[in-house]
Length: 135
Image 1 (cartoon, helix red, strand yellow):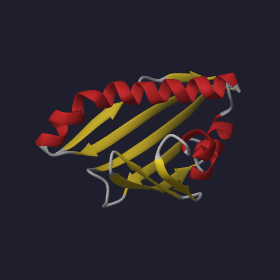
Image 2 (tube, one colour):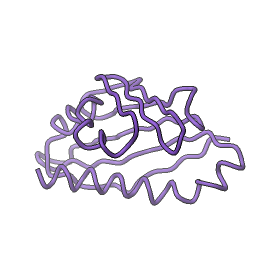
Image 3 (spheres, helix red, strand yellow):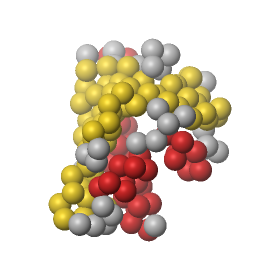
Image 4 (tube, helix red, strand yellow):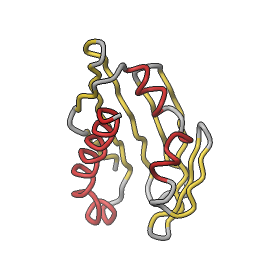
């Protein structure tokens, strides 16, 4: 069963091209995430790491500059999912961002983590916005 989760829309006071350019390359995440997960490795299109003993590989499968980035989990992930970053420039230096997660979860996985995904997605969106707005 595929479940859809959407973050709240956040405001980033930067041009969408700048945000897109940063988020569309996994290597840009190394300084932020590299020491927070086990075994972080990244190329422009793919990253892999381990969380609680589960190996995860993510791949950027679609990029539409400067408005959309789609990321998919590999078959080795605990559950299949697609993650989208949607960017819409409302005005110069006013970009709105929303994160969308489509997760394929069986009933057991949904019971274990389903209720945690929405707050996590909102938190990630807020942290991304804070990081860009502080830079």
